[in-house]
Image (cartoon, rainbow, N blue to C red; front, side):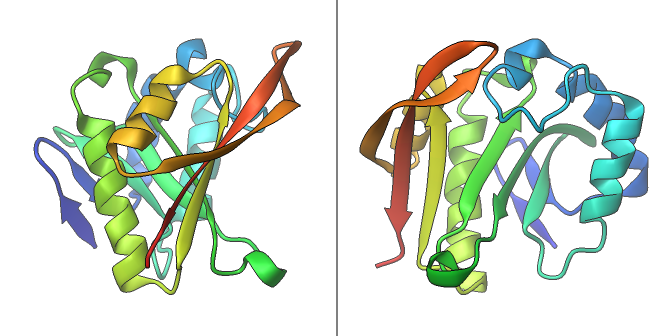
Length: 171
């Protein structure tokens, strides 16, 4: 499955994506704003493991952001269980060279529509580190609303941060 945007494609993973994934993910300006489980440095083994985990997903929950045939970013959801089963968590990143061009906002809008129209989700939530106003702005431009701030809820790189909770609902 492919979702075509203006200058990018959201698509499933391919075995040969490892090199461009590793190249673009291995950037502390990306990992500094993601959960600690995102490796830094990001090795070719990390890339291969991620691809193997997401290869042939049905339905696709994690897409590459393909620009000119290369993995230039990632967008996906993490399903949850129990009372949260219809509210997955959104995660994403984009290669630094494409920041500020509206690509991520457009990708989030497309992906959100996909989740609401092709999957069973009724709400999507994104939890953003308090030192990442650029990501907050991207979500707001994509129609997400800041629903709350959890004080001192996160620790990243030995800095205590607020957690900003963004959400969007299907109806």
